[in-house]
Length: 188
Image 1 (cartoon, helix red, strand yellow):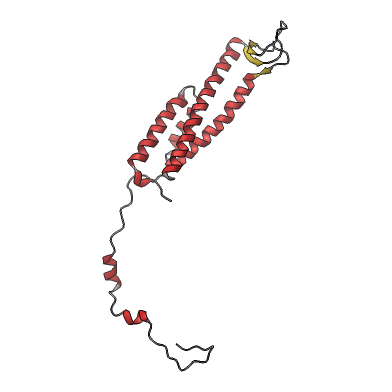
Image 2 (image 1 turned 90 degrees about the vertical axis):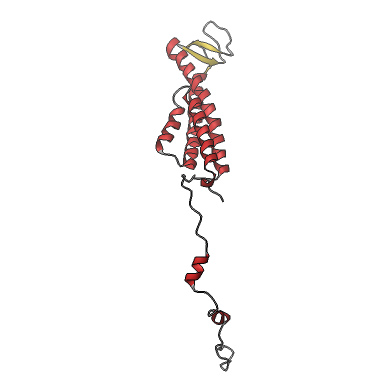
């Protein structure tokens, strides 16, 4: 090779090692025949995450399905006492007859300076339900299910006792799908 920077123009371009061995190489077509075929892609659906991500999402979903179910039952009991019997759960204050109240059911507006717990039950249930929806969405996304399954998960936190039933069904299905399709789980 000649180097114009150093003025070594008397050096000629010598053949490279690749050019010398190219005659002994096999053709590209023969090399392609030597490469084994790619392994078949899994026929089952591909999950949207790793096995650890799916198990973590399932655990979060199960915890909040249980908490949402309990809070929904408390909310229903509160609504029955409130709208059915006219009683509300109060903390603190004094009752209409002058007795001190620590915690108890009393007729509406009969406790002075007490806090109506019914309101806070509804607020707490609402926020826990939001977390339940997020946990259910994450699990749904990682499992790459159809939209109908997400609707089932969402309704599980609205209908009393349904969150317990839906949670067991979803957990069983996640475990079965992941165990029966280990090749379909992403690996990082």
